[in-house]
Image (cartoon, rainbow, N blue to C red; front, side, top):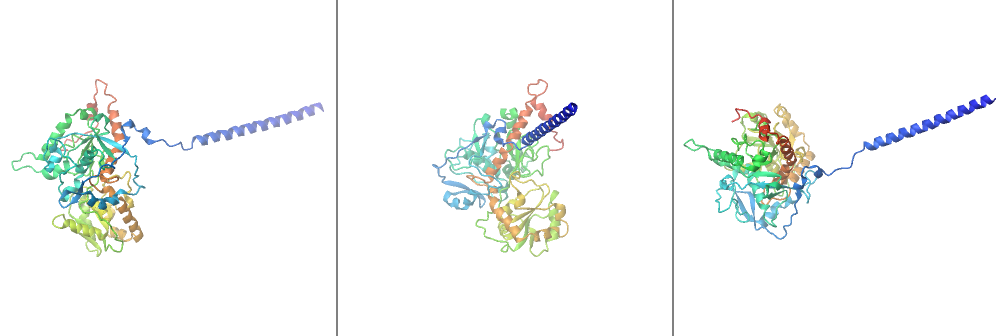
Length: 505
């Protein structure tokens, strides 16, 4: 009897022990899962500005211009030259640019300012090309008369003019200007070193050799620029990596670019550049300046634009422009399509203006290069662009979604039978109206003007440059890794880092 009781007690104790062990194990298991799940939840956000190396070099720039009222401003494209008009006359036409969609490109009163050191190059490299005569100063006094810029097709590559004016304006106390970039005179404070060579203007006006077969003025200026930069301590210090050079015309800087490749280029596209000289990771794509006037107070609708599809320009092009003639033969007999040869001669710009404003869609087809001014004329006309250019790179595409207001069609599809025309005819009225409204919202991003305004092309370009600065610093810092090694110099590393084709010239 006693043995039975002892046995029963043992069984009870054993069961209690197992229950206790099971409870403890379950508790520990649940607690471990709780901590695992907690550790895998999303961490709190970190301010990206704190992650930028040497971020103190970026600063918030407070605009306080209430005491300064400009008497004059440069009208960007009137007639053949930029002219001066009263600010009252200009205020009404530019008021629509003071606001824009914050959903795609956020506007902030405390935006980061990029600090720029600009070389005081002799005037022959910049405003001297506009026949401005130096008067004991490298730069014109922009508070007075400003040298005019040639009109016509010259205007489309005039960004060098507008960016330089904006930097000069940043030094005028209490001047009404935007805040994306400011000029500094101490290079150690600068985020980027700006080279103010009007390379597109130099090519357009001075690229022809004279009758004696001597070098063109454009070629001579490039050689002198390379020699000048090679002698600068700032260039030697970084190997040119922190320099900014404008070469917006595809044929500008043809001779110098292969020697200045470490710098950041501002370009219209990469069509005439080998990828080891220019590429989308290193350089900045900027818009053309449209040559037709902006469509102010556009009240048109889908039904009041009678032409479905519009193209006017050179039809027979080399290189990637073969698609133009293919599309010409496919579309020329469509009743609501305008596809014809055209140029800026005589009243060409006026005809293009009328044609685009009365069309629902405007073709932008690759020509000798992937890009053309036609895209930006279409945006200014609120004519929905149809882009047929497989290799095109677009301005500020890292912050702007072009598919909101453009149609993209692969070339191989566009030239197949009725593919393109059927695609466009199937775009509904509501869809077209949505894209048309979006065009009116983004058009300010492509406007060049002086004084520059928040959210216009000048400010968007500076912001695009600012987004390159961390990558520039990374390259510079990496190049210093072996700077103390006696057998390897920074220049040795630079020379080995890229192979320039021997037949590039």
